[in-house]
Image 1: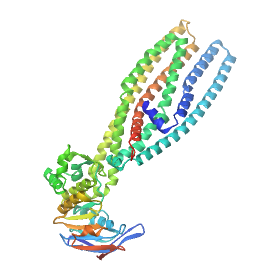
Image 2 (image 1 turned 45 degrees about the vertical axis):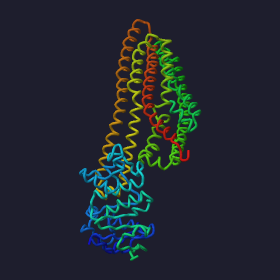
Image 3 (image 1 turned 90 degrees about the vertical axis):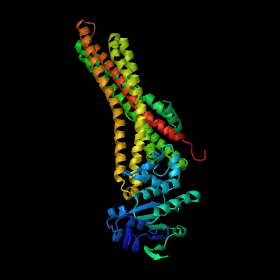
Image 4 (image 1 turned 60 degrees about the vertical axis):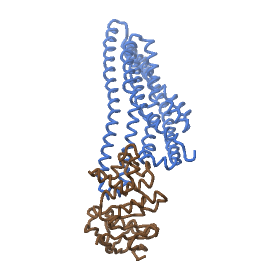
Amino acid sequence: MSIIAENLQYAYGGTPVLRGVDLTVPTGERIGIIGVSGGGKSTLLKLLSGLYAAQTGVVEVHGATTPQAIRRQVAMVLQSAMLFPASIRENITCGHPMAEAVIERACKAAQLADWIAALPDGLDTFVGERGGKVSGGQAQRIAIARAIAKDAPVVLLDEATSALDGATGGAVLAAIDRLTAGKTVVSVSHHPGALVHCTRVYRLEGGRLHHA
Amino acid sequence: MRDLQALLRATGGWRRFALLILLRSPFDALHTLVRAVYLQAAFNAIQRGDARGLGISCAVFGIGSLLLFLYNGTVWTLYATHTVRWIGTVRRKLFAHIASLPLAQIEAQPSGSWITRLNADVQAAAALLSQPLHLPHAVCGMVNLAVSSLVLVCIRPAIWGLVALFVVPHLLISRFVIARPMTALAESAQQITAQNTADLDALITCADTAILYDAQDYLLERFRRSSLALRRANMRMRRRSACGAGLYTLLGLSGYLLVLLLGGAWIAAGALTFGDLTAAFQYRGGMIMGAVMLTNSLINCRAALAGVRRVNETMQLPKEGL
């Protein structure tokens, strides 16, 4: 199993958001989680990604059980890509040493290669932290390139395509296809159409997962 | 100063500023005059053995000083109140202006840049009118320098010449070597402050990405680098200011010793009384103090003008729909 979550509970202050979530995802499977805004989908992803530590229950991702170890197994793409106020290159490498070929491959897979080639400073072009220097779709694809370059076995998508439309949306979807190929994927969305490629879809309701 | 005019036009309240600065400006000069006249009269009375004359001098000096400080305190209080209101107005107008900019424009700059515009730039601009040794003190120093100089040239032209010999180079060096590059240095420091704030902001706003991709050390390294650059930029300004302080010690002390030596010789020759020399020293002090206050204030004003320029630039950004 790539992901195992048992009896996950999580509360903000005294307000419970997750009330005993059980989930198992075999390696290479793509599952979807649907639910209303504020229903706990993002909290669940933060627990599965190791960003939050479980208050009660167990999370195991690719054999890792501590948040630090889990984070090494996971790449995540969020709805609103937050970029570092740095160059495209640094946003992809996150300051880690990385071969030029790996960066280029990630850019190509994220549908960024043509755009970057047209930029005077190429990969060294500065982007703002909210993608102010680039469009939303480009920022999203930089975030996807970052995730591809990490090459983690598990990919988590948090409303990754919700804010996109038209040609930009198409390019981002193609980039996500390249990112998720052969990986274990958990995708959350409040929009059923975004989960059509999932083999199983769950509904998160009242802090518990139900088959949708 | 055109930048300050533009800012005061945008925010209002410039007439009151001008009036209060004018009312505040004669204080140092009057203080020098009162002190010099008192010391001259007191030492001459001591030399004559005139105890009644000494008593009258002391009483007049006491009352004069009290009235002078009361006047200065009143004007300064009114000025400080007006300045606090003005800073609030600048911040409010700037915030309203930034809030009405197109989103694309806001997103084109790192968040640190906007935070710096609202905080550091406004503080730097406000310093021009509110902090010690800025515009109000520049005006006071100029009036003190002019009045002390005028009185000294009338009563002791030779001593005035000696003092001017040291004050003029001080003014020129301070003006052209220290004050002139200050605006560019301050602008560079403000830009680096914006970058430093953006790097700090990224530690918070991009925390999830940084944790997930193990990029905290990378972000901290960026913050460390921009903090170091900021420290260097501030050090460049401090070094210039320190040069000014060193110059004051060197030229001030040299001039003092020369006047003391020649004054002693003139007293020995009977051409000057001790009271006259003491009064001359007060006017010399007024000239030096005025010159130092003027030059230091101009150096600080130059740095503060960078903030005024950046506030003006922000205020001139076209609003959404215009």
